[in-house]
Image (cartoon, rainbow, N blue to C red; front, side, top):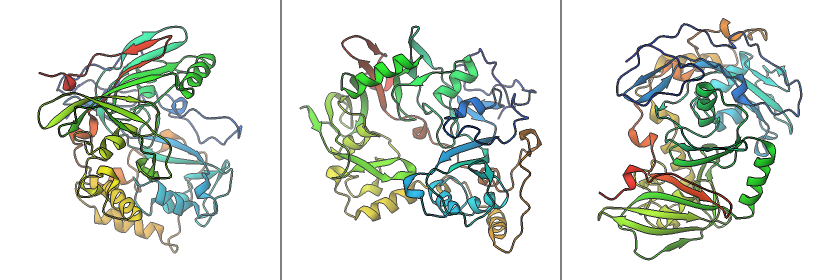
Length: 432
């Protein structure tokens, strides 16, 4: 293991060397004195990247980038399915990476604000339009230490080759460890507008607009179906020689996890698959998608009986004896939802349980346990490095497996009649 390090704002992340970087950082986060802010303008959209510290210690071990934990503000607005429900119950059910008692304790401690006011009432019922912010100890997931290669740049457009393992934008436990976060911290790039998305573990062509006009123009052509989207994937089994077209509708299975499935009431989706080559066990397949549903290629390849090799979510026996082929799950929708949820719950990432932590959380959550709320004026630099109610601080995590970082799915080319951007074929897709 190495000491913590930092990267200057104008320096890209180095390529993985297989060894830990031993430089040290002494600077405190640039916004370490940041106080809790109320929503000054209810209609103003807050960019989470603007509130992130520019320098957070990290270490690189065996080509994997581990970021030190830091305090951050999570912001959201009431979703339709939350209205009329207790806030702490909603958060406990929606945000699965925390202890089941965390939301109630965080509320009692005064870490949650509703419409700009500190909310310590654990029985508060959420209303339409509520603006919620939550101050928490953020432990970002590790990512591969790979460069973000620039494909093209103009006054209006910025196109890169996204490496696997990091999301495009802030989501869940990812913020600095995102494409936008890394471009901001390492290169000082801000104001980029996301034109489309790629899954966290997917690599390939990724387009950003630099201004509103370009953003509007490109998204208009995307909605009108003018984009040709070509992907490459490696799937299990020998794929048929003939082109396979899948038009199964896709909808949510586990909303809080973003997991999808084929369902009759889902959104229209269409994918065309063509085999490039096979080694008798796995096949490399070219895919053209005419729609852009969440996890579309992963769900459609599963339906065809050839799930993407190593896909932790969709290439699993939890989907039934045939791993979801033809949507034959051999169980009810509710049973499938619960089984998939349990397969990917955060406890499965714990190396071993911490009974003392569990007991302490039970005690703090008890209605009879009084807790003095934190002062609203508390600054980030006044906060401890160790958080007593943070699950990540108190429970050791397992080592992240290799197939968590990379999915054998690559966006090879996006084009219209006016422009075209593509990458080289990934190494795993080249026939030896």
